[in-house]
Every structure is written in structure tokens, then in C-alpha cells.
Image (cartoon, rainbow, N blue to C red):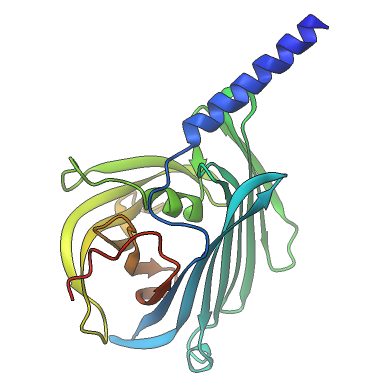
Length: 271
């Protein structure tokens, strides 16, 4: 009996240690935050408004424990559907300590439907991910990955990155991390590009921003390229106010048009 209790205690200790390694302080957002964006697509060298996006974070439970649930939803307009249909929903659960728990992406782009899912667990002091990917009605593809390093998805890393401090960072500073996207788990990087004042599209509002790029290597030529460059406010909210995206079907931009339920004052607003 004592051995059983000891084994259970050791297992619990390893689980707590793994989770602690993957946890992060949250100083940027609170439950109830909602961000609204306008989406633009580069069509024949002209930027055209093609839809909207929204991101919402609420406190809930997952597996019987307190958790954050975050949604990022993009919707193309009816006019944009004539160019390219886009209906994406990304959803993630994390602990209140920002430890990833579950991620799903449902994407209807063009005439293709894809669903990516990731389940996280933390056995024996490691991070284990179970992944599932399905395209249209094809049989789903399953994959498992385990590492001593923490893994994240696009949403959980965004939530974590919002509390990063740029103090002491030099331009070119890299933050390497494992990304699980539902198909595979690979090393990616976020690169700090510096500070910049940015005037919002169709607005007189200007923000002081920190600029970061999410980069990855091209599978064909091996060269590194920016996938998303994001401008976040240089204050405690670290709001993503602009995103420049290089997508499979072209380039797009997103501009923040509304924000409510913020945790901190918007001190990065110049005017």
C-alpha cells in the first residue's frame, strides 16, 4: 500500500512539474475580453475588405478544472466569396496558468474543409500531444508526439506571448517553441522586429507597438519566411492591433476595430 501511495505521489509530482514548466503568468487579459477586426485581402495589387474576425476569451472549465476558452473566428463577406470562400474557427482551452489543454481548427477555405485537433497531456514530466487531422471526407490521420519541451498551438502561444516583456530584447531576438497544429509537431520561432508607431487603417488612432514575426522554413527551398507579422500595443494589454499574413492563397491584413472587456488601460494609444 505504501509503495502504491509513493508511486501515485511520484506520478503526481511529475505531472505538476511538467505543467509548471509549461505554465506562464498572465498579465494581459481577463475573462470577457472581445476583440473585433476588419480583414483585407490583396486582390490584383489592390487591398479589398473581405470580411471580419473576432477573438473572445472566457473563463470556464475543462476536465473539471478552471480554464480559459478562446475563440478566433474569421468570416469572409458575401462579396469576398466570389473571390475566395473563408470560414475559419480556431478554439483552444488552456488552464488559468496558460498550460495548453486542447486545440481545434475548423477551416472551410475555397472548396476544401479541414479539421485539426490537438489534445495535450503531461505524463512522467513530459509534454505529450495527440493529434488528429481530416480533410473533407477522407479518413482522419492520427499522430502522437512526446517531448521534454512544452508544445503549443497557434492560440495558446498567442495567449502566452501577450504577456511577454520586450525589456532587454534586441531586434532579431528569437523565441523558439514547439508548435502542434493537428498534423505534426515542429519547432517554430517568433522573432522580435522592434518598436514602431502605427496609425490604424481608416482611423486617426495611432498606437505604440511592439512588432513580432512568426517565422518558419519553406519546405521547398529551406529559407525562412514570415508567416504572420503582428503589431501588439506597447502596454500591459499587448493587444494585437494589426496582423500581416502570408497565406496559401495570397496576402491578407487584419486591423483592430473594437475592443471591450480589457484588463488594463490602453496606455499605448497615442491619440
